[in-house]
Length: 65
Image (cartoon, rainbow, N blue to C red; front, top):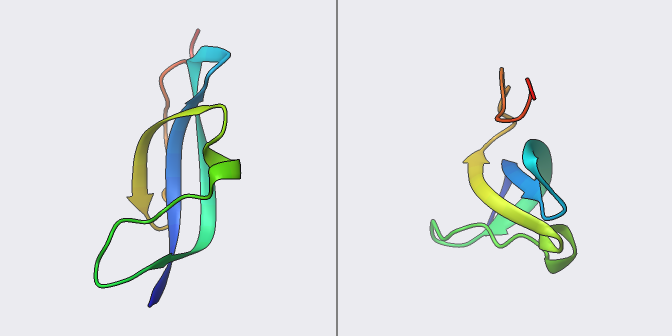
């Protein structure tokens, strides 16, 4: 088992025009499988992307609205 830090890009379901970023640390993966985000984290979100590591996002959709 390998532990990974991932950056998640998502929209809150009630604020659909503002994309947000969260870093989730210590997510378990086995044999190169996808990271399984906890249900409590996914609740109320529309997940757009899961990226490896703590990614520096320079600009997000909705930053200039």
